[in-house]
Amino acid sequence: MSSEDFNYSSILVKDIMTTALISVNPTTTLFQIAKMMDQCGIGAIIVKDNDVPVGIITDRDFAVKIVANNLSFDTPVEKVMSSPLITINHNEPISIAAEMMSSKKIRKLAVTENDKIIGILTSTNLVNQLAK
Figure (cartoon, rainbow, N blue to C red):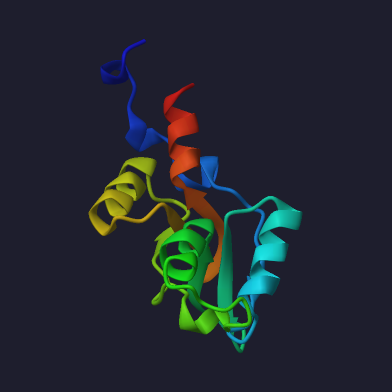
């Protein structure tokens, strides 16, 4: 089956997203974030302020923002998180998600249902789907 035979608009974000979510408050330190990512085997953590999602920190941020700028691991996550949080509805087709990620040059999207974050869609999720 070629890619032309397959309609990627029929696969929804909710079908391939990752549901393992961890969230922290803005004062959580980079050291604590790194430990959580390592222990849970995840590459992104949602930052919430009073239970309202305000940003995201990713494994890539450690190389690009933290190590490259020689930041202390005691730095609070609010200083380096990506904000505002970019989201996509769980019922959107993955083709829309891919377009968003490409145009915004990001690798992770928070997935929402009724304005609540229910998962994360990663570029790895998309590549794994394409490889099937």
